[in-house]
Image 1 (cartoon, protein in one colour):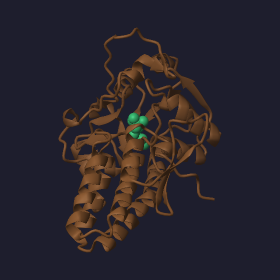
Image 2 (cartoon, rainbow, N blue to C red; image 1 turned 180 degrees about the vertical axis):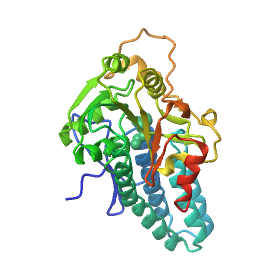
Image 3 (tube, rainbow, N blue to C red; image 1 turned 90 degrees about the horizontal axis):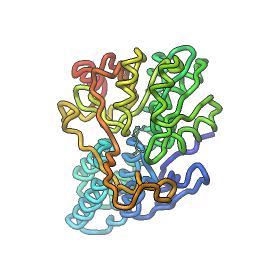
Length: 348
Ligand code: MRU
């Protein structure tokens, strides 16, 4: 049986699980336009770098199909407008831009709009399948890094829901457990959107992997108690030198892990590495609405008018990362050279 996907193409529509409704209910959305897909990305109905990339590609395929009967110039104009709309949704996850550029390159090679629309759709659908294969490969490489038994701490959601299926960092945990390792996962709640408590805990429960939810500020104490043997997280954008942007709170975890001599791993596909950026200082960091901080479950808990800072991501310097796991192998330690060597193994 094929595992439930997070986002996919069906009968000329984009379908996805609405992650804002989990874990209370599993609602499947039917999206018919690139504007609807853009809205779903912005409002985090679909989230997680790889899932956002695939969703954007499928959204662009919808736009191409809608414009397939137009003359070439008009087709290209409409495609460019859809690409722009999708690019504006979330700035940090580079997979979004990688996916859009991959499709636009194809469109520019094909002069006939109807044929271009078909090629774009086939490519976007191929990206759905590719994502699962890539994650499974990452799982195989990463599983070896985890201990035979013990506690693993993770942050945000990097599972099936953050990808099309299987997951990145959580995929590594799943692969390690499938290989017989006796792991217990400490799940950071992940303020302010609670992806850990709502999504990661839900996925681990369904998989029957032992898990304990902690609030973000408990991580240091749990490490101090000797209950964590490794930390593994995902990434939204990795600079050429290995500096890694991921969910806000990741940097603090890396500092804590170093201080407790616990290995700190990142798992991400090569599509998350932005070789155009020399280091993490150039990674754009999304800032989201103050309401995400001042409200809990839709109820205001902060005083009216209080100042709020709400960066959605932070950047962990490469020197705090023990290894970066990709689908073609492991960069250990992550440096400009080890990462470039991995990239050379593909056609990137
Ligand atoms: O804001 P989100 O939920 O999209 O952030 C997701 C993360 O930070 C994940 O760790 C990252 O995208 C890697 S997911 C495989």
